[in-house]
Image 1 (cartoon, rainbow, N blue to C red):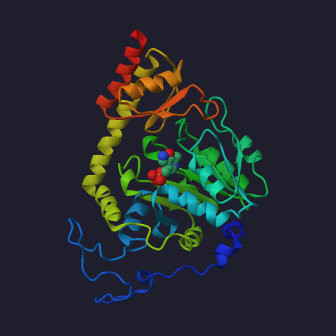
Image 2 (image 1 turned 90 degrees about the horizontal axis):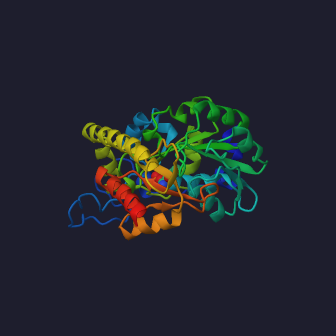
Length: 354
Ligand code: PMP
């Protein structure tokens, strides 16, 4: 059985849109895509009159090297949000198929599924935030097409060990695709699930430049999976998903100098995360700081709603995660610069004396 047997038959049979840029081969006078012959007279406008390469070779090769994979196993997308959307549309038949998630977790898995009218089955994390693979697998039904595991998980920050992922992959063989979301992997220092793709054709890994690479505004995500899965998703991705300025920004961020700066920023963030975990735990009104392998901390408060308001009144916006199961008293605080983090601590201290 091929992983493609799990995909929607009509997507497998679809003749994809063939863009002018894909059909073009060679030539210097480009009159095939109804573009403007003139570049716009704006800063950085050179070449912007042309449609971008759908999957720029240089960027695909650079990301393949970065993620320890090969270009034929990569699809570069508009953030990993787009990859989640593509997987849902390619694998889930509306009104029939579904996904399994482990809440509290990233919200887009369920939103993408609901847009597609796919069922969302929940296998909640344990009270201590860990993922029980047996509970997850018990939630899988014959209609399940995608099983999401987010590691480090948003919003809790917990990790799922590679051994557990391997166990889940073993059990899902021939049944569903295991989608491992590693948006925060760079902050965890643990091995990536991309190594599983050699042995399993039904594992896909999501990575992004939005977090550790400081490029949330450029929207560059990567899906890593077997070439046949990549080929399937290329049938339904928009013709020109990656704006040229975003491709240029990604290549600059991934240059030798860009990588040096990135390492420095991640190092700084890890120091700040450790400092904040200790300082928050000692702050008035804090019940607990959940251990985190990501660039944020989930923090339990005596009065989460009041703390949220006091932080906001001081100009500090954090994420209210009280609606998530098991986190009714928690706020998610992204690690900022040293000064920004100090402001959070100052508001908590001031609250104690108010
Ligand atoms: N996955 C997880 C776990 C996230 O937290 C986020 C963003 N908050 C995303 C994916 C989406 O990231 P992007 O689309 O920016 O790559």
